[in-house]
Length: 311
Image (tube, rainbow, N blue to C red; front, top):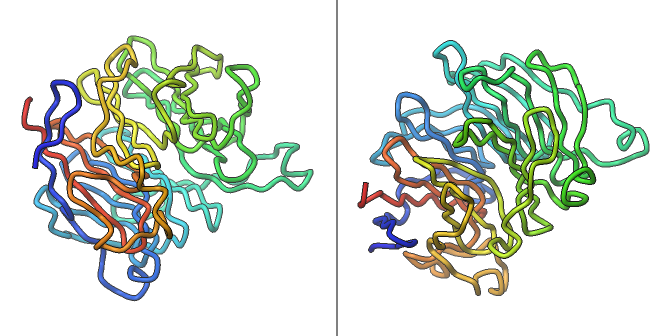
């Protein structure tokens, strides 16, 4: 089956891979994050035990580790040629940097911000790093997307620096869900998936507001990935948006606008899902060949590969 956005065509591979078949996977197992390592392995972050799963490009499970009951956002960074995972857990509030073998090397504490002193909730959803390999200073940014709707900045060694609330930009954040450093242009920008406001806010690496876009494109933007000028934006309400280098819409992949109206959504059963149509995309990534991998918020998980057939 071929799905298409503009001139970009992809071969849909339904159920490309699966999480570990055990009790935790069958009762929860929601697949929330996905990334590619420098060596070409595909990593999935899911709410099951084990939580971090490594697959080859054929969807074979190679190894796994970790227990993250609220597995949510995942980002891969590279330092001195070594891959690290940034993992956020919405249940425990953990934001952890780990080696690919699972060894934690840094953990971020809840920032000392007045909203929390006043009783505000802290439920982190994503982390991003202004990577030195792209000319950045190593600052770490985290999104408190399910708690107090803030984005926090830390130094590369984990000291809290400052906070964004959106008011210096296009307006107060409403579920700043995923964050990402966009290096498609000469100057890197921090993208914030301002999901509840159906838009993306973009900031300079020092936190200065640059622009807002996507009000006429997005319904529920989750996170980001880039490849050869393209911007991939999975949307929770049944579709994946593909944008060009000007952040203009090329088209939607797997569009299924009625999915969220099905009783029980997003936790639908296998017989309620259809090849070629997404239900609840939550994470996504390009690989080094321009193929796309999408994970969905479904009990037991759903992992789909869209193989690039154009180039």
